[in-house]
Image (cartoon, rainbow, N blue to C red; front, side):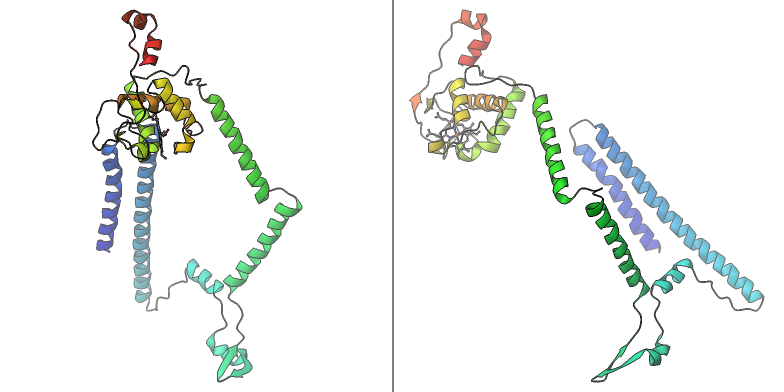
Length: 307
Ligand code: HEC
């Protein structure tokens, strides 16, 4: 008993310790959901503890009461007979069989190679279960097929598809309208956007262009030579429309304009990094236009775009 109690305590302590360990690893600030889970977890653990303690106390109480009753009976010179508990009564009732002593009355006059058959009745729990299924079938039939109060599978499916479509269009409507295309795309400099671009690149492009941009199935993206032009607009367009006949798909259906702008900008940052095992240059040398100082000040977005 003591050992069991110790084990239970250990498990609970470990369970308590684990969220704390996770919390230390997390770099993000603790948000409301985390607090909710931690609090719920604590409440749950405490509830379990209370339950265990109550069961133990009840058992102790029961033993104590029985001892008292036995003592009392002994003093009176009687033999203490424990009253049947509710559970025991219920158990006997659902498993009610005609006892072995009545075998003589139950036996059928079949005799197969010495194996005889008894005609005992079915266990009550089995019969109750059977009655429940009959009631269930009637309710089910009425609810689904007679009164149409509950939706059938197909209706349910249609309703869910409709809800999903609504949710999708609501999401589309809530997205900021992005009108970035190859005519107005600019090189983004923001570190956050570039790291988003890097993520898009690693997830979608690295398998053909290598994570360093050194090139593999696709060309080297770190040199000054380009098959389809090396300006931000050119790169954006190549990503958007792809070169399907050469194995580079159009990414327009898969990436948002912002994502394409970010990944195109990220590719430009790879220029001149000279990664190991780089693929030999392909295409033509691309030299960025040199923009005079005044123009840069006059129209900085334009200047950035030309980079
Ligand atoms: C299945 C392989 C594959 C994947 C994935 C792939 N590319 Fe390509 N990519 C290629 C090939 C092949 C070419 C060369 C096309 C040609 O020969 O004209 C290419 C060309 C390019 C070019 C033009 C290079 C130049 O020299 O003009 C750019 C830019 C580019 N890819 C960017 C990307 C980006 C960004 C992604 C991810 C969103 C990506 N690629 C994913 C295979 C791939």
